[in-house]
Image (cartoon, rainbow, N blue to C red; front, side, top):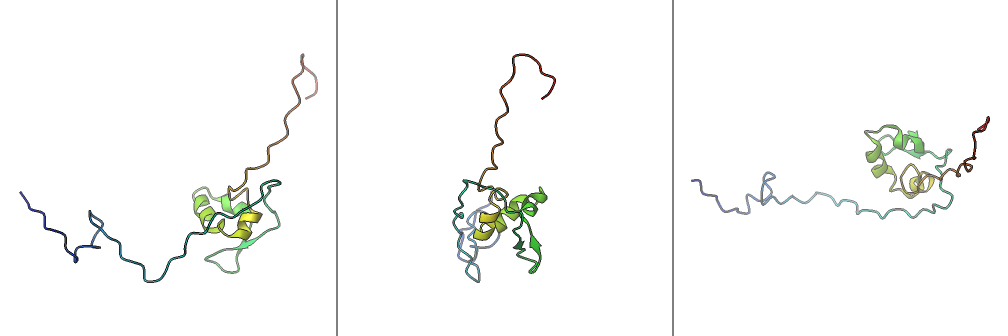
Length: 116
């Protein structure tokens, strides 16, 4: 039967097993930003709005780009929709506001009609 050695200061932070304590980062990390406040009364994505990509300065993208790639969708929303200008102009693509509901259809008729 093996005996477990007591964990000492030199073992803390080594590996990811029980008792793992992560090392602090070298530089401060950004504090989480609160979800932007957006008025959803007349929500719609602004078709003329463009925003700059984080890793490619000078490259501009539209709201549609946020949802274009299913595999990247959540990462894009997390990265860009925390910015107030993107959230305000892409409120539907960012998932902040629900898309407008289409108007209800006409009531059904008692008998079939020739035209819809």
